[in-house]
Amino acid sequence: MATKLSVNINKIATLRNSRGGNVPDLLEFARDCERYGAQGITVHPRPDERHIRYQDVMDLKPLLKTEFNIEGNPKENKFVDLVLKVNPAQVTLVPDELGQLTSNHGWDTIANADYLKEMIAVFKSAGIRTSIFVDADITMVEGAKKTGTDRIELYTESYARDYVSNKEVAISPFVLAAKKAHELGLGINAGHDLSIENLMYFAICIPELLEVSIGHALISDALYFGIENTIQLYLRQLKVNQ
Image (cartoon, rainbow, N blue to C red; front, top):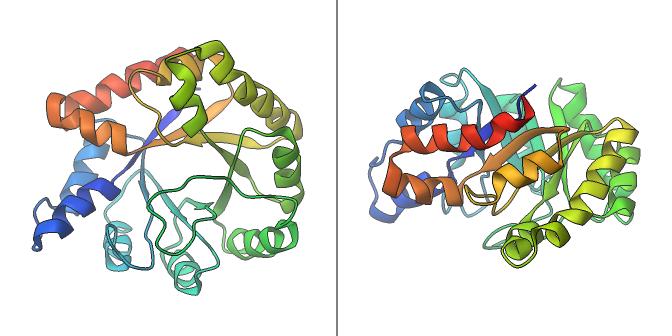
């Protein structure tokens, strides 16, 4: 089975919000991404609504035909209420702080074990698949298993950063973490700074990879290549796992 591509559309909302109005049209963009081959749409609403607004999430739900993935910190009550109301295919729990520019670390699944277990049970009882953001650390993966989550999302910033200088060293902890997750029966997603340059190697090295969520690099590439062509370029990188 090929790894699925979920397009994170936060950056489109950022562009829209910078000018006011509804240009670019976020909903139309999401539908176009699906039309051009994306197998999912990801959003990460934050409390200040500086990009994706809570209303956007509500508006997207009835329009999407592929998997809808909502990321966020469940410590925000408004986020939990939103996810339960929208009932997406997947919720990805991310340990962001209020006002954080972008996600920069995974959960400490040991220190937060009881909390994660409680929140995951809430979402799973509503029939929503759960995934939690973790670093490429075997101990954190083992802790994730104990929370009851369906999947983990490997936080790939360090891989992307080190890929240029030594891709074998960069991928090594992710291979080990993915192997452990697979042994434990956890599904494996990945995201953060994955790009057209480093995506294929990541997918080759982690054949169990179910889904990648990509926003910044993909949207940036679309400025040069157009969104239809860009999605096809990214899908081509993932065909190694077919």
